[in-house]
Amino acid sequence: MDIATFAIQLLNAVQYGLVLFLVASGLTLVFGILGVINLAHGAFYMLGAYFAWWFTLATGNLFIGIVAAFVVSFLLGLLLESLFIKRLYGRDHLSQVLLSFGLILVLDKLRQIVFGRDVYSVPLPEWLSGSIQLTDLQSYPHYRVALIGFCLLVAAAIFFVINRTRIGMIVRAGAENRDMTRALGIPFDRVNRLVFAVGIALAALAGAVIAPVSTVFPGMGDSMLILSFVVVVLGGVGSVPGAAIGALLIGLIDTFGKVFLPEFAGVLIYLLMALVLLWRPTGIMGKREI
Amino acid sequence: MAAMFATALFLPLVVGDYYLQFAAKVMLLGILAMSLNLNVGFGGMVSLCHAAFFGLAGYVLVLVTPEYEAPNLVWTLLVALAVVALVAAVIGALSLRTRGIYFIMVTLAFGEMLYFLFHDTSIGGGSDGIFLYVKPLLTLGGLSIDLENPLTFYMVALVCCALSWALITHLLASPFGDSLTAARDNERRAMSLGIPVFAVRLVAFIVSAVMAGLAGYLSAAQFGFVAPQMLGWHMSAVALVMVVLGGTRKVAGPLFGAVVLVVLEDILKIYLGEQWKLVYGGVIVALVLFLPGGLQDILRLTLPQGWFRRTAPVTQPIVVGGKQ
Image 1: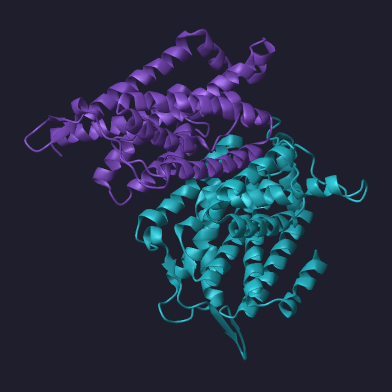
Image 2 (image 1 turned 60 degrees about the vertical axis):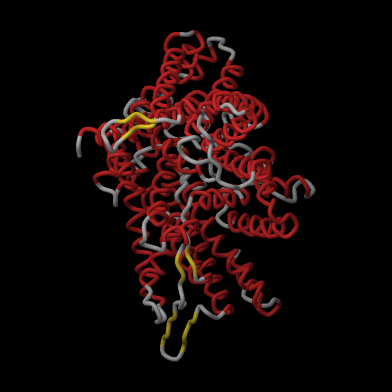
């Protein structure tokens, strides 16, 4: 493997890991703070891609499409939280699994009624559709570079909000000890709603930004859901840095696994998960006791 | 329950082949749901990879079957169940290191690993699935059991369903069952009493997986076809819906859950056609929000007071290690 190929694969791995991080960070926060297991998270990754496709087509501008996908999903998240999710706080995990499964079926069907079940592709604007020539034969698309930059910006924003703002402090306290935070008089209802809506909007954002490089298809949420679950198991529930580590690990292992061991690439990430479970059952950055 | 199974023996006298096949399908799903409830209701372990064992046994049957020769019922069944037990032991040993939300996520991930194994590789026909051209056959002396015949198949499914119910009931009445429910109610106390919690849970996990494998084996034999969807987590989630619908505190509850859910699915498909999943999903959401005790809640709300004794509390948090 020469340097250029290696660089391309490394960039792909990082890009994959970053997109995965956007999905998984929302998931881990919803777990950690609301104590709710949301299987419908992957459905919003898929919906985000469809929203981006629809708004890009309607307005002719990819940027507006992506922002609109984020905003619409955020509002949808607020609505779902106040209608369904808030009734799940304190209920057993079994109810949460079933309710979110029911939501998946409904959302998936609604998506089919509204957008149809075809596979779509999102066109790139002129200035992003070129590519950087690395060697005579190999090049790297501009959009993927922009994608990496954008995901890094969002990741930085997530870390800034969580580590440097008041709302982030509340979120961290909530992930650490929910009951104590509530006892200190934090308005948890509003925080919960906000965290849920932001989590879902992040998943939709990831789907929206990936839409131009992959295609938009109905089953895209399912595999992403499983991967982001593995990320959360690797990183530890409620830990955003853990999600970042887990997502990048999976990005690297999956990308280079496909290069070196194409036959077993699919199994490698589960092997990694099994190893982490043996070594530290609550994840790399998780709390020690369960 | 025993009386109900005995009554079901006479079903073939009243209905035709189509309904017999339908009833057999429901019973197989009933086995799947009852075995899942051994984990969920009695073990406090919400597993999302149960369908993986169901589908795996089906795949093993198809893969070990020679192309044009009827497979031997006993041998193929034993091989299928042995493979399932082995896989369940590995997945269980790893997953049971975790609790609560982690357990759900880890079982989901391992189940999907099996799904993608059959979906992405050519082992079992990839995403299209694979056909079983000849059904399993058993010849003992002059008596032969041919699963091709709907009546025979119905009887086999009925006997397996009754045996599964009896086995779970027997297990729960034994000291093993007491250990399992004790570990569900309070893990720390169970441990301090000297109960080997990990081993007890692992055995329950494997036993329930093997029963799911039995149902999957018969299901593959019934339809003559296996596809990756049989292993996917949507199937596991449907089994969980059956469990909650039927109630988690009775062994036979999930069997009734399976009956109601499958009948509901068929009715919705007939009246709504393409859009049935919309209502189906809505029903599941409504079940969780308004009937957390499942069908028992309907009976309790409609029957006069005192006629029906509720066995499941409204919200029974599954407490592990003194924490929720």
